[in-house]
Amino acid sequence: MPNHGLIGALLHLLSFLAAGWFGYDAFFGVNYKDLYDTNYKNYPNTVYTITRGEDTNSLEREAFVAYETEDYNLAIQKFNQIENKQPYFNFYKANSYLGLGELDKAKDLFTIETAADEAEFKAEANWYLALINLKQHNKTEATKYLETLIANYNYKKEEAKTLLESLN
Image 1 (tube, rainbow, N blue to C red):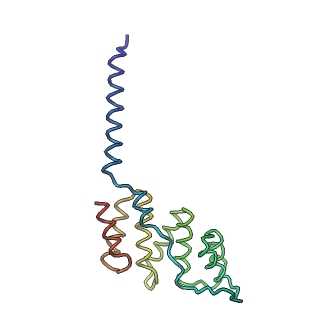
Image 2 (cartoon, rainbow, N blue to C red):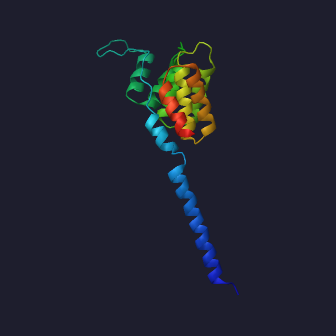
């Protein structure tokens, strides 16, 4: 016959240990969601000036209007339709994917930006790659991108240092 008292005591002990572990993690572990939410802000359109009442109705204008109004699906669609691609399109498409929560697509495009020799948004791409890795709870990769940002660029350098301290 099983000893119900012993089984009950073991179950209580197991639940106590599990609660202790989760409590420790909640109080002393890295809160990736808070770090991401505190530091994430979609990058502003700094390359295409949109003027009210402008008659020009190009695909690039439509893409950036969609981007600025946070209609990221439409922005991606318009960026993809443009035949003469500008080097900065991948960066803004990556931010659009990030705004939609499509982290892997954003990560792929940001990685292309960091690898390109003449990329205009290399520093910014490192920042967003760090944030994506935070959101995915990948402390090692987030740390790598933050350290690259701190060592090589001025963009968000102080924020990167603070974030790195929070991870350690």
